[in-house]
Image (tube, rainbow, N blue to C red; front, side, top):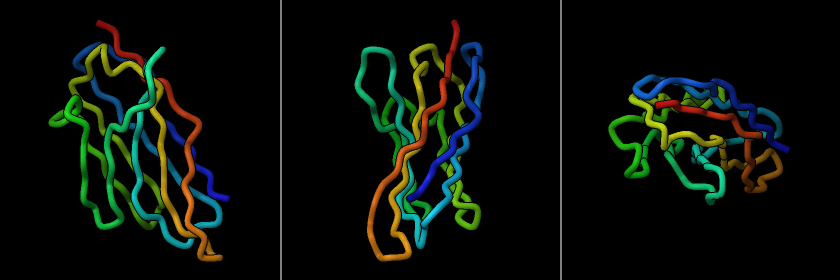
Length: 120
């Protein structure tokens, strides 16, 4: 199994910044793409940003120019730098990782989620 542990959520005023971290551990041979999703109350979980193993990135239109996803491959960690936060960014943020384990099996894991609250 692969475990993802997130940190860095919290409360901030509009215009502020937060940095989320997500560390993967367990039966990992290779991590491939890693993602951040968010889920606001009463809404479906949505993809915020993706980064491939090679470092290519993709963002939801709502966060382009404000959020930056990055990764540290030796540490099996992905980050989400969130700047110029808006009240509509308020949500639980989840990390997701796709991996190959030491048996050659391909899978995906989710983190437990971290709350981000932006006040106006």
